[in-house]
Image (cartoon, rainbow, N blue to C red; front, side, top):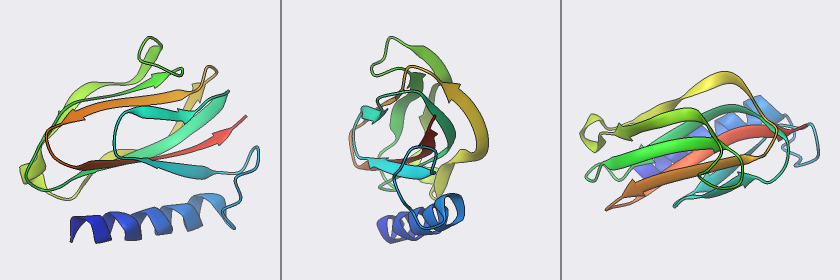
Length: 121
């Protein structure tokens, strides 16, 4: 149920943020991660993010960085996501300048999905 809800939100977000959904420079796009990883490997603007859990296991630590690893500047500070709250956690309408790229790091003992909305400069 949660995965289906996340997929619907991702499609709505893509349509709203990127029009036709082209992944060209300057066009809004999104990337889904199920584990820590690079979202953008060049200068980008982060517009928002949504994080969903499996409804049972918490995300104990979640951080988004300006850069391509966890040594960059924190643009979303480390925090946890409580699975018992259900639904999605995140923020949209952001305008974070990430000149070194975008990297997300999160830890969970279950399943979690992160969708980040951004565009390359």
